[in-house]
Image (cartoon, rainbow, N blue to C red):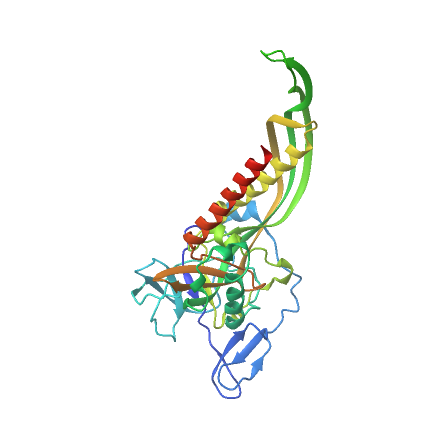
Length: 365
């Protein structure tokens, strides 16, 4: 399972029964739609499905047994410019990288293995809505005040690709015990060298201990190195109640990336995220006004996982000869990205703040 690093565009074709053209998954309508005549077809529901299936983490890591394949045949290509490795349909001519738009691409040897995604949240935001959401984001919020005035209407759209990105989700039942030194504030009177009496805060330290039990459900871990993890996390959350069983039909017309962060590495990341929250909860449980020397010991039980695909629009735009990247959550429309900064506006704002501070100091005297 480790080391799989392909980005791919699902290649199975679905033919329109009316005109013979290709059917693609339509985000706005949530079904397969003919790109020529507009005929549509519902994606068949799995009546036997009972919801997303969780898999035993320890057993899978030990045995290495898992479902393989995407249910469609693909041809890998590698971009010489950005290094991305993608897979495209056998029926599509490779012309450019879906991530950076470069035409410097070469064919790669097909991979031998891939874990089948368990579930997927289908795209609900189409290209037009993604661009509309981005335009709104670019001109709103506190940060927009520090963007160049000429940005509006002068940026040029570059590459935009609808991609299903890979994630792991982890469940775990945890029980933690903790010890710490609890600090209680109190005040004493002290006389300084001039004879004036001041009240000084001091801390009384006492040992404390306790426990904390919590079940973590669907801890989300980004399973790719193709994009910055922190950037992807800024378009969270995804509504995990909208997960449906994976079907190749959802890939029709969209890109999909294979994981580069394997299951073991993903678990270590997810475990670390959960443990950070455990430590925070235990720290909050320490009595008194402050604490130090917090020591937390945690036992982990009933760890399970899913491999899921979540919809993201990956895009970039050009302004002033520089390329900026942005992402749009393909389920909610939430946007995060890079944007130019007007250092003239930043400097002006800093100057105004300094003037206000100076005035306050002069008035207070």
